[in-house]
Amino acid sequence: MLLSGILVKLSRLIKGKMKLKERVALGTFLMLLVIYVFLLTKNRKKESKFTVWEAKIVHEDSLDKFQQEPKAELKVEAAVFPKQQQKDSKEEFISNEINRLRLEFKDVQIDDVKNPFKVAASWVNERQIYPSEHPEMSAILKTMSTAKIIHADALPKGTQIKLLLSLEGGQKVVFKQKRYERDYVITGKPYDGYDRHNAEIAAFHLDRILDFRRAPLVVGRTINLRQEIMPVATERLLKTFREENGNICYFGMCLYCKEKEMACADGDIMEGAVVLWLPDEWSVFQKQRHPYQRTYVDGRYAQWERDETYCNRVVKKTVPYDRGSRLLDVTDGTVFDYLIGNADRHHYETFKDHGSYVMIIMMDNAKSFGNPFHHESSILAPLRQCCILRNSTWIRMKQLQNGVLTLLLEEVMSNDPIAPILHPSHLNAIDIRLTILLETVEKCIKEHSKEKVLLEKWDGI
Image (tube, rainbow, N blue to C red; front, side, top):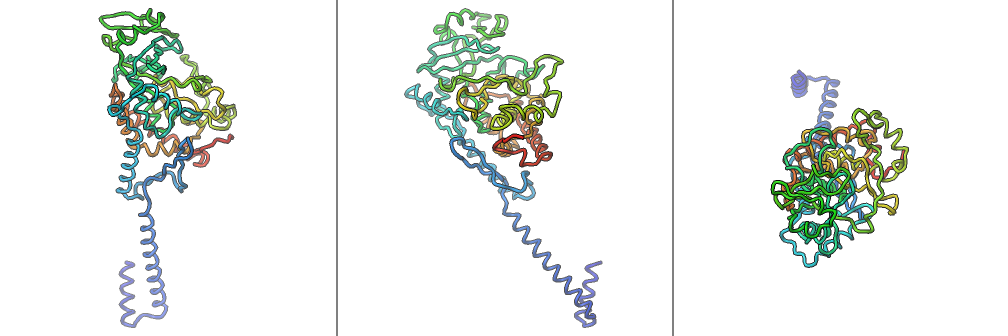
């Protein structure tokens, strides 16, 4: 109807029958129409200049922290960004990360077993166990998995069977033996079951991908117990060895170690994970109770399980969480533990006598990857209640969504000596959990604002 009316008036204008007022009105309308079309075209050109990846990786000082360029919105709207630019940026990120994280054991030549361990020792400082860029990692892990064992002892610390091994050159490692097949599902409580050796390996590589750099180095290894352990074992360890159905078994020494729950090899061959012992300067720890510790008693709940205001009322007002890096380390740890399904972080360790800026060390991760079909929501409590997270961690999570995290994890674990490390169901669980983590943080941002949730420094309430 509007178009028909305009055409009639134009016809009358051409024939000279239009009155002066009608001519002015029509001219004004046409001028406004031209301006509208011009502005619409200009805005569309501007929109096409955006790229999909909001965050750029910027390495600063020895900690290689990520920073985010200021943007108006956190969410990436797919409709705004050209699909080809999205694809190119994502593929470039994946390629760069694979190059940074790839392990090539076959091509590594080791002339002196001491050299790789000297490099590993030089890496450690208050805020890292290894650097973001670590091309020497292949040589270190290969040496851990192949160096001759010269001494073996029980490691009484903790509740699970562990061996303390000394390798040629004097380096110590902790050996955690296989107890389950890869597809075994741990049912019951989220912290039930024996330690999972493959969980230690997977958690270490996840720490690399997240670029936290707070987990000790871990690699898979197979050991001939009869030839490599028993001849160099201490008397107290050797006393725990038995032979059962043609398999060499042992029960070690620990709080819950008992003969009826021995760990048994496949014949003489025991698969496991070796964890690098930190250098002397960095191997004295301050053990602290986690503010979100469980009671481990049926029917008895901790305060944080009964009160969603617990973080604001208690944690944020308690040293060392009232300011500084510690509470941000706790919520980083929440991201890490939720992804691996670790509900057993009842205590944590920091480096002793190295100042207040020391990190929480992400060690003892073997109670992870138990049940890929259960996503324990209680692990999220510190993040959900405190609603603060490092901005760099948020950026990293966004970059790793939509299958990127598990693609990288599967790739970097593929060259481990005992690969495959995880059953596919656990990789699928990680993808699901990352989505839930992102939703949790987005809810915090919606309720409290981006500026109050995403931080690099916590100055307190």
